[in-house]
Amino acid sequence: MKSDYFINNEAHEIAEGSTINAAILSFDAKPPYAILVNDTFLPKSEHEHFILTPNNRIEVISAIQGG
Amino acid sequence: MSNEHNVKDALNIYGTKLNSRLLIGSSMYPSPSVMQQAIQASGAEVVTLSLSRQNPQASGGQAFWESIQSLGLHLLPNTAGCHSVNDAVNMAQMSRELFQTDWIKLELVGDDYNLQPDPIALVKATEILLGEGFKVLPYCTDDLVIARHLVELGCEVLMPWGSPIGTGKGILNPYALQAMRDRFPDVTMIVDSGIGLPSHATQALEMGVDAVLLNTAVAKANDPVLMGQAFAKAIEAGRSAYLAGPMAERTAASPSTPTIDSPFWHQSA
Image 1 (cartoon, rainbow over the protein chains, first blue to last red):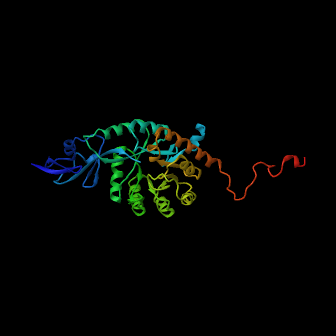
Image 2 (image 1 turned 120 degrees about the horizontal axis):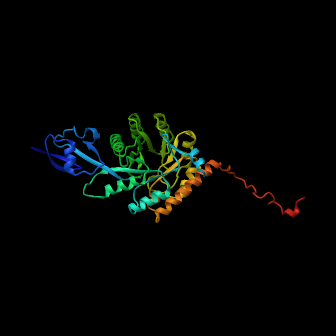
Image 3 (image 1 turned 180 degrees about the vertical axis):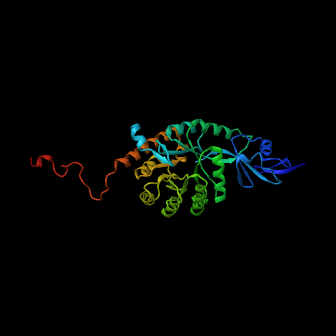
């Protein structure tokens, strides 16, 4: 069974019980990146253990120019 | 300056010693190539960068990251755009993981008109991040009391504005910056925003400010590479002038030529 999750504000269907790593794979994220789940930083060490629940909001974040 | 002099007169950022007193931003350059050349021309050893949502379909993000890495400089991530303590803390944590540095240029916007830092949120976020082992470089106004709170929390660096970000107006309140310099002589003080001209940077360094951080003044120059060189020279001049000890300003004129008040043939032997 699949459920909706939001990755960078777009809805994605992912199998229930998936980890953050599975979500990142479906998003085709390019390393290096950092992850926010529901507006909270999720360390890399937890990406393979954190089980998503429906409507989780995931942000895939990477480097940009800055002043 | 000789290398020996440079080592003795290094800029100190939480124990890291740097020869250049210019920290430079990576934004708004006409192209990645010009960015690289301008940063190299400036002699800066620290470059700032930020974080945003990744778009896997766009290749620009990856290219930027590779371009920055190839410079081999110290990275100073910022928390630009954050309005809340929680957002700033999250962004700092992501930056540390991504860029492998404890340094964080802590920016907390208090007002969107002039991007003035929110002093209350800044102090709160600083306390949390110092507690988590970050080396916080707080972007603050020239308010002496907020600076004191930041120093008392453990900040070894203060980054007051000269004027609001991107305005290029230079140092609007020299008195306030001088007071901060005099009040915290052992804290590394970096003027972080509003520098528009090399002469503004010289002025800051002449006052005893340890370094300047700028972006727009170089990136938006007609020739960013040449402007990077100009800032390198201006900063070196300002620092040398500070170390040399400027003369005392006077109200009354004083002749620099000893005999100017009378032709020498009227003087007795």
